[in-house]
Image (cartoon, rainbow over all chains, first blue to last red; front, side):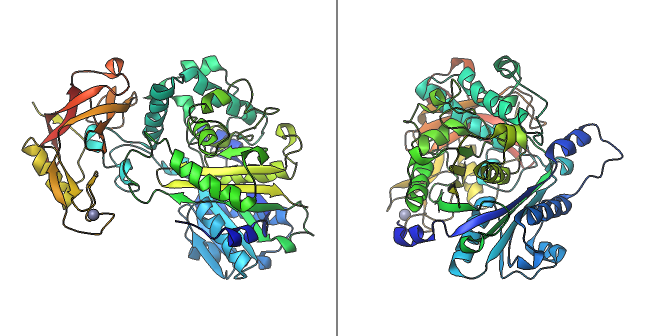
Length: 396
Length: 135
Ligand SMILES: [Zn+2]
């Protein structure tokens, strides 16, 4: 199955991210932990709206400029358009990767000019759970194996890491380096949930197992938040307050055949998903792994980071965890990873916060955690459903 | 004594799978035209679209390709630790199951295992659960 590379190439760099907004992850989480009676907690809709108005202000645009809408979380697009008071010409809903590629396509084709993608989920307040007997929907692997006592999103990643260990001899200490590096980044981000909670490798090794071989600190957070990302025609993004961040490439490989079977997760460790979708994104952008300055992998668990490094060809297969040692994925390293703290230490926004951080880095406004001279950034989601990489570049 | 287990997914093709288990047989659907074996059950062959899938008996032999242990309780019926294994069956599919008579401490890469059944019970009644012991 191919794609029309000439047309994909032509779309490269034609759409820009011009505005980003997010909510007060750190303050909201701290208030929720102590159940502060005087704190104004927002529901999913409220979180989404707060992120939207921040992104709008950031973009320098007016609400009337928004003519496309993508939504994610429990909020549906009819309701969101009503809350925003707009009549969008594009209505799409789903994940950040699906809505963002839909937005790029719609803007490139001329269907609309400026799209707001809005996400809000008060998952901690709502008591959203990612495992256990009450899970009866979603991907089949989330519920089908209940009789064997196997559940939870996190158990997928335990199986993947155990296979990596069996095959390549990788260790828990090596994986701990990923958790510690990402936590270090979060301590430089005042809005990160774990901003004030530094962690050592020793802390990591002593944390309890949730699903062996993975520890508590291998897993992402569960917290409330909202994110908004505004995209616009790149040729109409030049006079706005910030440097535009161009969408140069993206790729998609969905599971399709054997989607719900275990081999993609276990023996393949998503290599096929990542390598084929990565090639598409690199080809569209006219780049290769050596052109990428900054990586924002969807870190549902630590083990995703080495898996992406291998799948996209930053390292050979089996060498992803070795690459994660000795500061190579930290600030000042060869390829800084999840510099705002990712989903493990900044905020579990299902990849939305990864895109916001890519934008802030490429605008060179990331403060204490700024990667020096960064010009390109890559974001990717990968799970049982497939892989969805995006490549961004700092525009003029 | 039957072990209490969390509820199976039942109905349609899933019932057929468990009926064979209750007879002490592990059978999975396969398409003879496309030479594909499916797990979990499918209503139709994903390649040729035939609804005419055959429930073929399996050898019950396989190798452990991964495992994990739940140290936190997810189900009322199952106090931790709960060991789970992924068995690569001789016929191809990777089958999530439990080790019987051994734990994660005994597992090595591609450890050969063979099928057995244990008596279990969920809200729908008693059933036999396919698990694996060392070959
Ligand atoms: Zn067939």
